[in-house]
Length: 361
Image (cartoon, rainbow, N blue to C red; front, side, top):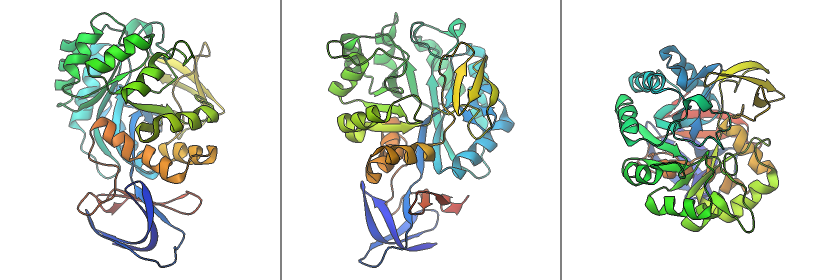
């Protein structure tokens, strides 16, 4: 396959040229020819997504995973982390087995698991079920990771909880540890980053505010060089804060969808981690009004941040390369010899094609 006279995203910038690929990229040729109006960017990498099209990874339903893989590919995602909720260990174990045994028939690649809980705080649990919260437990983590076939790439933990620092120090040797759903202050978060945490889950959401005398997890993430996630649906974070965060964090900014089973579905009633949620005008909440995850795709997030004022190059990097680096996934960049996981967009950032290992989806 050859795409000619396109703008190709290579090393955080666009070059005009031609790209040739089969299952891997075989040639990238830059030239001074006229651009035909198409962008070729790395496949998007969503490291925080619970589900879409009525399905949720926490359900543990084998028949639900292929529709998710297909949905992600339709919206420009070529690699994702199956993200679970705060649930009892036996429920999570079933989900881990299902993810482990999944053999996709096309669509996006499952690059591993993100355990968003159950090692979270009561005070900042958000839409996570309080009855299923669990103190950080290395043995439980190892059991779940074994159940997944060793696929856990990312785990979110509240670092102020009893045993959290020891958990972080041990588990950070095996996967990326992220701070989130936490009441931690700056000093506690800094200690967690010193112990081995390197990431922050959906920055600003599920943590203390970033204040001038109490910078909290946000300030600690900045000072420690951690990578950070942002939910860019226009509901969770104000566009001004998105712009400011991009200025502060630069290449460590990760766009995520934090999508729920309601993504790609109409407004209505749904379920999240055993709790009912209501979706109205694309806003998902618990019955008490607590904001839950989102109903957007990663491609929506990319378009949104460009609309909010981020340069396209920075937005593409934050939606592909940065999350791959943060979670240790070999994805999110275009280079000769690398998998041909590519997205083709028109000049208005509308989808034209998604390729996974060179196969159009």
